[in-house]
Length: 483
Ligand code: ZN
Image (cartoon, rainbow, N blue to C red; front, side, top):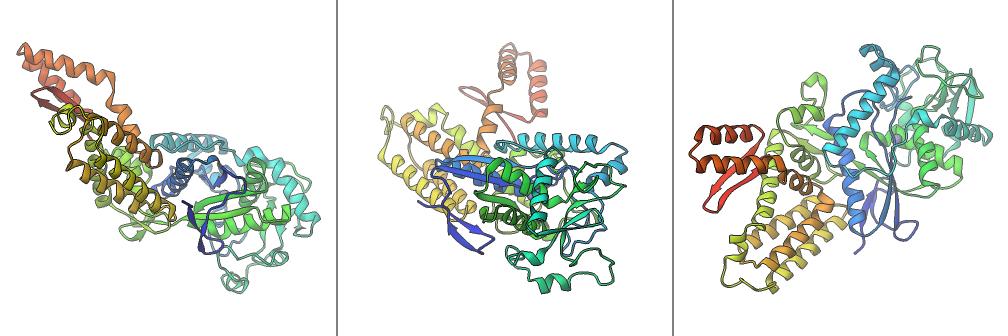
Protein backbone atom coordinates (compact mmCIF):
# COMPACT_ATOMS: atom_id res chain seq x y z
CA UNK A 1 0.00 0.00 0.00
CA UNK A 2 1.21 3.43 -0.85
CA UNK A 3 1.70 6.14 1.70
CA UNK A 4 0.01 9.49 1.06
CA UNK A 5 1.28 12.67 2.68
CA UNK A 6 -0.18 16.17 2.70
CA UNK A 7 2.39 18.35 0.97
CA UNK A 8 2.26 21.97 2.16
CA UNK A 9 3.87 23.01 -1.13
CA UNK A 10 1.19 21.56 -3.44
CA UNK A 11 -1.53 21.89 -0.78
CA UNK A 12 -2.78 18.37 -1.43
CA UNK A 13 -2.25 14.78 -0.41
CA UNK A 14 0.32 13.16 -2.67
CA UNK A 15 1.52 9.60 -3.04
CA UNK A 16 4.94 9.30 -1.43
CA UNK A 17 7.64 8.26 -3.90
CA UNK A 18 11.22 8.68 -2.73
CA UNK A 19 13.97 9.79 -5.10
CA UNK A 20 15.83 6.54 -4.49
CA UNK A 21 14.00 3.22 -4.14
CA UNK A 22 13.88 1.98 -0.56
CA UNK A 23 15.63 5.03 0.91
CA UNK A 24 14.21 8.20 2.43
CA UNK A 25 16.09 11.38 3.27
CA UNK A 26 14.37 13.56 5.85
CA UNK A 27 15.43 16.99 7.08
CA UNK A 28 13.69 18.17 10.26
CA UNK A 29 13.91 21.69 11.64
CA UNK A 30 15.16 21.24 15.17
CA UNK A 31 15.17 23.42 18.26
CA UNK A 32 16.56 26.90 18.76
CA UNK A 33 18.49 26.22 21.94
CA UNK A 34 17.86 29.30 24.08
CA UNK A 35 15.22 28.12 26.58
CA UNK A 36 13.45 25.06 27.97
CA UNK A 37 11.61 23.24 25.18
CA UNK A 38 7.83 23.59 25.46
CA UNK A 39 5.20 21.00 24.68
CA UNK A 40 4.43 22.66 21.32
CA UNK A 41 8.05 22.18 20.21
CA UNK A 42 7.85 18.50 21.08
CA UNK A 43 4.51 18.07 19.36
CA UNK A 44 6.27 18.94 16.12
CA UNK A 45 9.36 16.78 16.88
CA UNK A 46 7.15 13.81 17.80
CA UNK A 47 5.16 14.26 14.57
CA UNK A 48 8.44 13.97 12.62
CA UNK A 49 9.39 10.97 14.80
CA UNK A 50 6.13 9.15 14.02
CA UNK A 51 6.63 9.85 10.30
CA UNK A 52 10.18 8.43 10.32
CA UNK A 53 9.15 5.46 12.46
CA UNK A 54 6.30 4.65 10.07
CA UNK A 55 8.63 4.91 7.06
CA UNK A 56 10.92 2.39 8.80
CA UNK A 57 7.90 0.17 9.60
CA UNK A 58 7.18 0.19 5.85
CA UNK A 59 10.71 -1.04 5.21
CA UNK A 60 12.43 2.17 4.12
CA UNK A 61 15.94 2.98 5.18
CA UNK A 62 15.56 6.45 6.72
CA UNK A 63 18.25 9.08 7.14
CA UNK A 64 16.96 11.89 9.33
CA UNK A 65 18.95 15.06 9.95
CA UNK A 66 17.80 17.47 12.64
CA UNK A 67 19.57 20.78 13.04
CA UNK A 68 20.34 22.62 16.25
CA UNK A 69 19.93 26.39 15.86
CA UNK A 70 22.57 28.06 17.99
CA UNK A 71 22.91 31.41 16.23
CA UNK A 72 20.97 33.82 14.04
CA UNK A 73 17.35 33.21 15.09
CA UNK A 74 16.13 36.75 15.80
CA UNK A 75 13.16 37.80 17.86
CA UNK A 76 11.50 39.26 14.74
CA UNK A 77 12.09 36.31 12.41
CA UNK A 78 8.77 34.78 13.34
CA UNK A 79 6.81 37.81 12.21
CA UNK A 80 5.11 38.07 8.86
CA UNK A 81 7.13 41.13 7.95
CA UNK A 82 10.64 40.66 9.28
CA UNK A 83 12.56 43.86 9.80
CA UNK A 84 16.15 44.25 10.91
CA UNK A 85 15.48 45.30 14.47
CA UNK A 86 15.39 41.87 16.06
CA UNK A 87 17.82 40.56 18.64
CA UNK A 88 19.34 37.09 18.52
CA UNK A 89 17.30 34.90 20.89
CA UNK A 90 20.48 33.24 22.15
CA UNK A 91 22.13 36.58 22.83
CA UNK A 92 19.06 37.72 24.80
CA UNK A 93 19.12 34.54 26.88
CA UNK A 94 22.89 34.89 27.47
CA UNK A 95 22.42 38.45 28.70
CA UNK A 96 19.49 37.68 30.96
CA UNK A 97 21.09 34.53 32.43
CA UNK A 98 24.51 36.21 32.63
CA UNK A 99 26.19 33.44 30.67
CA UNK A 100 28.09 33.18 27.40
CA UNK A 101 26.14 32.21 24.25
CA UNK A 102 28.03 28.90 24.22
CA UNK A 103 27.02 28.13 27.81
CA UNK A 104 23.40 28.86 26.88
CA UNK A 105 23.37 26.76 23.72
CA UNK A 106 25.19 23.82 25.31
CA UNK A 107 22.88 23.78 28.29
CA UNK A 108 19.65 23.92 26.26
CA UNK A 109 20.91 21.55 23.56
CA UNK A 110 21.66 19.01 26.30
CA UNK A 111 18.21 19.63 27.75
CA UNK A 112 16.70 18.96 24.32
CA UNK A 113 18.65 15.69 23.94
CA UNK A 114 17.69 14.58 27.44
CA UNK A 115 13.98 15.20 26.77
CA UNK A 116 14.17 13.55 23.34
CA UNK A 117 15.48 10.45 25.07
CA UNK A 118 12.92 10.57 27.89
CA UNK A 119 10.10 11.00 25.35
CA UNK A 120 11.53 8.11 23.30
CA UNK A 121 12.23 9.93 20.05
CA UNK A 122 14.15 7.70 17.66
CA UNK A 123 17.55 9.40 17.41
CA UNK A 124 18.23 11.30 14.19
CA UNK A 125 21.26 10.20 12.17
CA UNK A 126 22.97 13.49 12.97
CA UNK A 127 22.24 16.77 14.80
CA UNK A 128 24.40 19.40 13.08
CA UNK A 129 24.83 22.81 14.71
CA UNK A 130 24.56 26.10 12.83
CA UNK A 131 27.73 27.55 14.40
CA UNK A 132 29.73 24.60 13.05
CA UNK A 133 28.63 25.30 9.45
CA UNK A 134 29.60 28.93 8.90
CA UNK A 135 31.99 28.13 5.96
CA UNK A 136 29.18 26.23 4.16
CA UNK A 137 26.87 29.24 4.64
CA UNK A 138 29.53 31.57 3.26
CA UNK A 139 29.86 29.36 0.13
CA UNK A 140 26.10 29.56 -0.52
CA UNK A 141 26.04 33.32 0.02
CA UNK A 142 28.96 33.78 -2.41
CA UNK A 143 27.23 31.82 -5.14
CA UNK A 144 23.92 33.67 -4.60
CA UNK A 145 25.83 36.96 -5.03
CA UNK A 146 27.55 35.65 -8.18
CA UNK A 147 24.25 34.55 -9.66
CA UNK A 148 22.56 37.87 -8.92
CA UNK A 149 20.11 36.52 -6.30
CA UNK A 150 21.72 38.58 -3.54
CA UNK A 151 23.24 42.01 -3.08
CA UNK A 152 25.52 43.72 -0.60
CA UNK A 153 24.75 46.93 1.29
CA UNK A 154 27.10 48.22 3.98
CA UNK A 155 28.61 44.79 4.58
CA UNK A 156 25.18 43.15 4.91
CA UNK A 157 24.07 40.63 2.30
CA UNK A 158 20.40 40.39 1.39
CA UNK A 159 18.46 37.98 -0.76
CA UNK A 160 16.67 39.85 -3.54
CA UNK A 161 13.27 38.17 -3.59
CA UNK A 162 12.28 39.91 -6.84
CA UNK A 163 14.76 37.51 -8.52
CA UNK A 164 12.90 34.43 -7.29
CA UNK A 165 9.37 34.36 -8.77
CA UNK A 166 8.32 31.32 -6.70
CA UNK A 167 8.78 33.22 -3.43
CA UNK A 168 5.52 32.90 -1.49
CA UNK A 169 4.49 29.60 -3.11
CA UNK A 170 4.92 27.46 0.02
CA UNK A 171 3.11 29.77 2.41
CA UNK A 172 0.55 31.02 -0.12
CA UNK A 173 1.68 34.59 0.52
CA UNK A 174 1.57 36.95 -2.45
CA UNK A 175 4.13 39.73 -2.67
CA UNK A 176 1.29 42.25 -2.44
CA UNK A 177 0.11 40.69 0.84
CA UNK A 178 3.61 40.66 2.23
CA UNK A 179 4.26 44.27 1.33
CA UNK A 180 0.97 45.30 2.93
CA UNK A 181 2.19 43.74 6.18
CA UNK A 182 5.36 45.79 6.32
CA UNK A 183 5.34 48.66 8.78
CA UNK A 184 5.58 51.96 6.98
CA UNK A 185 8.22 54.54 7.75
CA UNK A 186 11.03 52.11 8.62
CA UNK A 187 14.30 53.26 7.15
CA UNK A 188 15.80 50.40 5.25
CA UNK A 189 18.94 49.75 3.30
CA UNK A 190 17.17 46.91 1.50
CA UNK A 191 15.83 47.15 -2.07
CA UNK A 192 12.53 45.71 -0.90
CA UNK A 193 11.34 45.50 2.70
CA UNK A 194 10.69 41.80 2.14
CA UNK A 195 14.29 40.96 1.18
CA UNK A 196 15.87 38.92 3.91
CA UNK A 197 19.39 38.82 5.31
CA UNK A 198 21.92 36.12 4.46
CA UNK A 199 24.78 37.73 6.34
CA UNK A 200 24.70 40.60 8.83
CA UNK A 201 27.09 42.87 10.57
CA UNK A 202 26.31 43.96 14.08
CA UNK A 203 29.15 45.08 16.34
CA UNK A 204 26.98 44.32 19.39
CA UNK A 205 26.40 40.70 18.40
CA UNK A 206 28.21 38.32 20.77
CA UNK A 207 28.86 35.69 18.07
CA UNK A 208 30.81 36.81 15.01
CA UNK A 209 32.84 35.18 12.25
CA UNK A 210 35.13 36.39 9.46
CA UNK A 211 33.68 36.46 5.96
CA UNK A 212 34.56 38.02 2.59
CA UNK A 213 32.22 40.86 3.65
CA UNK A 214 33.73 41.49 7.06
CA UNK A 215 32.96 40.08 10.49
CA UNK A 216 29.34 39.18 11.04
CA UNK A 217 26.85 36.36 11.56
CA UNK A 218 24.51 34.40 9.29
CA UNK A 219 20.77 34.90 8.82
CA UNK A 220 18.72 32.17 10.45
CA UNK A 221 17.24 30.65 7.27
CA UNK A 222 20.64 30.08 5.68
CA UNK A 223 21.70 27.41 8.16
CA UNK A 224 18.96 24.99 7.09
CA UNK A 225 19.85 25.30 3.38
CA UNK A 226 23.52 24.73 4.24
CA UNK A 227 23.03 21.73 6.52
CA UNK A 228 20.30 20.05 4.46
CA UNK A 229 22.43 20.24 1.29
CA UNK A 230 25.58 19.13 3.10
CA UNK A 231 24.13 16.05 4.84
CA UNK A 232 21.37 14.99 2.47
CA UNK A 233 22.42 16.28 -0.96
CA UNK A 234 20.44 18.17 -3.57
CA UNK A 235 17.52 15.74 -3.73
CA UNK A 236 15.74 15.53 -0.39
CA UNK A 237 12.52 13.59 0.02
CA UNK A 238 10.87 15.18 3.04
CA UNK A 239 11.34 18.37 5.05
CA UNK A 240 9.46 18.63 8.35
CA UNK A 241 8.79 21.45 10.80
CA UNK A 242 6.09 23.20 12.75
CA UNK A 243 3.57 25.35 10.90
CA UNK A 244 5.24 28.45 12.35
CA UNK A 245 8.30 27.53 10.25
CA UNK A 246 6.40 27.80 6.94
CA UNK A 247 6.88 31.55 6.74
CA UNK A 248 9.36 33.09 6.62
CA UNK A 249 11.80 30.29 7.51
CA UNK A 250 10.96 27.61 4.95
CA UNK A 251 9.93 30.06 2.26
CA UNK A 252 13.40 31.60 2.50
CA UNK A 253 15.09 28.19 2.61
CA UNK A 254 13.45 27.25 -0.71
CA UNK A 255 14.55 30.55 -2.30
CA UNK A 256 18.15 30.01 -1.14
CA UNK A 257 18.50 26.29 -1.93
CA UNK A 258 16.83 26.42 -5.34
CA UNK A 259 18.79 29.49 -6.44
CA UNK A 260 21.99 27.80 -5.22
CA UNK A 261 21.42 24.41 -6.90
CA UNK A 262 19.36 25.60 -9.85
CA UNK A 263 16.66 23.01 -9.20
CA UNK A 264 14.01 21.88 -6.77
CA UNK A 265 15.55 20.33 -3.64
CA UNK A 266 12.67 19.27 -1.36
CA UNK A 267 9.93 16.98 -2.68
CA UNK A 268 7.45 16.90 0.24
CA UNK A 269 6.96 19.59 2.91
CA UNK A 270 5.27 18.19 6.02
CA UNK A 271 4.23 20.59 8.79
CA UNK A 272 2.71 19.88 12.19
CA UNK A 273 0.02 22.34 13.19
CA UNK A 274 0.05 24.38 16.38
CA UNK A 275 -0.74 23.12 19.80
CA UNK A 276 -3.38 25.07 21.74
CA UNK A 277 -3.92 24.93 25.48
CA UNK A 278 -7.60 25.01 26.45
CA UNK A 279 -8.33 26.27 22.93
CA UNK A 280 -6.02 29.25 23.27
CA UNK A 281 -2.61 29.97 21.89
CA UNK A 282 -0.01 28.97 24.47
CA UNK A 283 1.62 32.10 25.90
CA UNK A 284 3.41 33.10 29.04
CA UNK A 285 1.13 36.10 29.53
CA UNK A 286 -1.99 33.89 29.54
CA UNK A 287 -0.44 31.61 32.14
CA UNK A 288 -1.07 28.55 29.94
CA UNK A 289 2.53 28.03 28.86
CA UNK A 290 3.96 24.59 29.60
CA UNK A 291 7.49 23.39 29.16
CA UNK A 292 7.97 19.63 28.92
CA UNK A 293 9.50 19.75 32.40
CA UNK A 294 6.37 21.48 33.78
CA UNK A 295 4.25 18.48 32.78
CA UNK A 296 6.74 15.85 33.93
CA UNK A 297 7.10 17.60 37.31
CA UNK A 298 3.37 17.16 37.81
CA UNK A 299 4.09 13.45 38.05
CA UNK A 300 2.96 12.36 34.58
CA UNK A 301 4.95 9.52 33.11
CA UNK A 302 6.82 10.72 29.98
CA UNK A 303 4.95 8.13 27.91
CA UNK A 304 1.64 9.72 28.94
CA UNK A 305 2.90 13.03 27.56
CA UNK A 306 4.22 11.36 24.40
CA UNK A 307 0.87 9.67 23.88
CA UNK A 308 -1.00 12.95 24.43
CA UNK A 309 1.18 14.80 21.92
CA UNK A 310 0.99 12.14 19.21
CA UNK A 311 -2.54 10.79 19.50
CA UNK A 312 -4.25 13.24 17.18
CA UNK A 313 -3.47 13.99 13.56
CA UNK A 314 -0.36 16.12 13.08
CA UNK A 315 -2.16 18.24 10.49
CA UNK A 316 -4.83 19.35 12.95
CA UNK A 317 -4.49 21.70 15.87
CA UNK A 318 -4.02 19.76 19.07
CA UNK A 319 -5.99 21.08 22.02
CA UNK A 320 -3.89 20.25 25.05
CA UNK A 321 -5.30 20.25 28.58
CA UNK A 322 -5.37 18.14 31.72
CA UNK A 323 -8.33 16.11 30.40
CA UNK A 324 -6.22 15.08 27.44
CA UNK A 325 -3.45 13.95 29.79
CA UNK A 326 -5.92 11.96 31.89
CA UNK A 327 -7.46 10.34 28.81
CA UNK A 328 -3.98 9.52 27.49
CA UNK A 329 -3.05 7.96 30.80
CA UNK A 330 -6.20 5.84 30.68
CA UNK A 331 -5.53 4.74 27.10
CA UNK A 332 -1.93 3.82 27.87
CA UNK A 333 -3.00 1.88 30.95
CA UNK A 334 -5.42 -0.12 28.83
CA UNK A 335 -2.61 -1.06 26.46
CA UNK A 336 -0.27 -1.96 29.29
CA UNK A 337 -2.89 -4.06 31.07
CA UNK A 338 -3.63 -5.77 27.79
CA UNK A 339 0.00 -6.69 27.30
CA UNK A 340 0.25 -7.86 30.92
CA UNK A 341 -2.77 -10.10 30.40
CA UNK A 342 -0.87 -11.86 27.61
CA UNK A 343 1.77 -12.90 30.17
CA UNK A 344 -0.83 -14.26 32.60
CA UNK A 345 -0.67 -18.07 32.54
CA UNK A 346 -4.20 -18.46 33.93
CA UNK A 347 -5.71 -16.26 31.25
CA UNK A 348 -3.69 -17.81 28.46
CA UNK A 349 -3.67 -21.49 29.52
CA UNK A 350 -6.75 -21.72 31.60
CA UNK A 351 -9.38 -22.44 29.01
CA UNK A 352 -9.86 -26.12 28.19
CA UNK A 353 -10.98 -25.02 24.74
CA UNK A 354 -7.58 -23.60 23.88
CA UNK A 355 -5.15 -25.43 26.18
CA UNK A 356 -2.47 -27.14 24.16
CA UNK A 357 -3.67 -25.62 20.89
CA UNK A 358 -0.88 -23.75 19.13
CA UNK A 359 -2.94 -20.96 17.57
CA UNK A 360 -6.53 -20.38 16.63
CA UNK A 361 -7.72 -19.14 13.26
CA UNK A 362 -9.85 -16.49 14.91
CA UNK A 363 -6.87 -14.74 16.42
CA UNK A 364 -4.77 -14.97 13.29
CA UNK A 365 -7.40 -13.31 11.13
CA UNK A 366 -8.06 -10.72 13.84
CA UNK A 367 -4.38 -9.78 13.71
CA UNK A 368 -4.37 -9.64 9.91
CA UNK A 369 -7.44 -7.38 9.89
CA UNK A 370 -6.01 -5.11 12.58
CA UNK A 371 -2.70 -4.73 10.73
CA UNK A 372 -4.59 -3.89 7.54
CA UNK A 373 -6.67 -1.24 9.36
CA UNK A 374 -3.60 0.17 11.12
CA UNK A 375 -1.64 0.45 7.87
CA UNK A 376 -4.56 1.87 5.88
CA UNK A 377 -4.96 4.59 8.52
CA UNK A 378 -1.25 5.42 8.67
CA UNK A 379 -0.96 5.36 4.85
CA UNK A 380 -3.67 8.01 4.77
CA UNK A 381 -1.40 10.92 5.74
CA UNK A 382 -0.52 9.29 9.11
CA UNK A 383 -4.05 9.17 10.48
CA UNK A 384 -2.92 8.08 13.92
CA UNK A 385 -6.27 8.35 15.70
CA UNK A 386 -7.77 5.83 13.27
CA UNK A 387 -4.66 3.65 13.68
CA UNK A 388 -5.03 3.73 17.47
CA UNK A 389 -8.75 3.00 17.06
CA UNK A 390 -7.84 -0.20 15.20
CA UNK A 391 -5.52 -1.26 18.04
CA UNK A 392 -8.13 -0.61 20.74
CA UNK A 393 -10.81 -2.52 18.79
CA UNK A 394 -8.28 -5.35 18.59
CA UNK A 395 -7.76 -5.40 22.38
CA UNK A 396 -11.54 -5.45 22.92
CA UNK A 397 -11.95 -8.43 20.56
CA UNK A 398 -9.04 -10.36 22.08
CA UNK A 399 -10.40 -9.75 25.59
CA UNK A 400 -13.62 -11.51 24.52
CA UNK A 401 -11.74 -14.48 23.04
CA UNK A 402 -10.19 -17.59 24.56
CA UNK A 403 -6.52 -17.49 23.71
CA UNK A 404 -3.90 -20.19 23.66
CA UNK A 405 -0.19 -19.67 24.47
CA UNK A 406 0.47 -19.70 20.71
CA UNK A 407 -2.12 -16.96 20.20
CA UNK A 408 -0.52 -14.90 22.97
CA UNK A 409 2.84 -15.06 21.17
CA UNK A 410 1.29 -13.85 17.92
CA UNK A 411 -0.62 -11.04 19.65
CA UNK A 412 2.48 -9.88 21.52
CA UNK A 413 4.46 -9.78 18.31
CA UNK A 414 1.69 -7.74 16.58
CA UNK A 415 1.71 -5.28 19.50
CA UNK A 416 5.49 -4.97 19.21
CA UNK A 417 5.12 -4.15 15.50
CA UNK A 418 2.58 -1.41 16.22
CA UNK A 419 4.81 -0.08 18.96
CA UNK A 420 7.68 0.33 16.49
CA UNK A 421 5.57 3.23 15.21
CA UNK A 422 3.96 4.43 18.46
CA UNK A 423 7.06 4.07 20.63
CA UNK A 424 5.22 3.97 23.95
CA UNK A 425 5.05 0.36 25.18
CA UNK A 426 8.70 -0.69 24.86
CA UNK A 427 9.79 1.92 27.38
CA UNK A 428 7.27 0.71 29.95
CA UNK A 429 8.34 -2.88 29.42
CA UNK A 430 11.98 -2.11 30.18
CA UNK A 431 11.06 -0.50 33.48
CA UNK A 432 8.76 -3.40 34.44
CA UNK A 433 11.70 -5.78 34.55
CA UNK A 434 13.58 -3.68 37.06
CA UNK A 435 15.60 -6.12 39.14
CA UNK A 436 15.66 -4.04 42.27
CA UNK A 437 11.87 -4.00 42.46
CA UNK A 438 11.72 -7.73 41.88
CA UNK A 439 14.07 -8.27 44.83
CA UNK A 440 11.97 -6.10 47.15
CA UNK A 441 8.77 -7.89 46.13
CA UNK A 442 10.37 -11.22 47.05
CA UNK A 443 11.66 -9.78 50.34
CA UNK A 444 8.14 -8.56 51.13
CA UNK A 445 6.66 -11.98 50.40
CA UNK A 446 9.18 -13.59 52.79
CA UNK A 447 8.48 -10.95 55.45
CA UNK A 448 4.76 -11.68 55.20
CA UNK A 449 5.37 -15.43 55.53
CA UNK A 450 7.30 -14.70 58.74
CA UNK A 451 4.48 -12.39 59.90
CA UNK A 452 6.95 -9.48 59.88
CA UNK A 453 4.22 -7.04 58.87
CA UNK A 454 6.23 -4.01 59.88
CA UNK A 455 8.83 -4.82 57.22
CA UNK A 456 6.29 -5.88 54.59
CA UNK A 457 4.36 -2.62 55.09
CA UNK A 458 7.58 -0.64 54.85
CA UNK A 459 8.39 -2.24 51.51
CA UNK A 460 4.87 -1.71 50.20
CA UNK A 461 5.02 1.95 51.18
CA UNK A 462 8.49 2.38 49.63
CA UNK A 463 7.37 0.81 46.34
CA UNK A 464 4.13 2.79 46.31
CA UNK A 465 6.12 6.00 46.57
CA UNK A 466 8.05 4.88 43.50
CA UNK A 467 4.76 4.39 41.67
CA UNK A 468 4.87 0.57 41.87
CA UNK A 469 1.47 -1.07 42.22
CA UNK A 470 1.42 -4.42 44.09
CA UNK A 471 -1.29 -6.98 43.60
CA UNK A 472 -1.50 -9.97 45.95
CA UNK A 473 -3.02 -12.98 44.20
CA UNK A 474 -3.37 -16.64 45.21
CA UNK A 475 -0.44 -17.34 42.89
CA UNK A 476 1.84 -14.78 44.52
CA UNK A 477 2.40 -11.06 44.37
CA UNK A 478 2.35 -9.33 41.02
CA UNK A 479 3.54 -5.81 40.46
CA UNK A 480 3.54 -3.18 37.79
CA UNK A 481 4.57 0.39 37.42
CA UNK A 482 1.61 2.75 37.63
CA UNK A 483 1.50 5.76 35.34
ZN1 ZN B 1 15.09 25.18 9.78
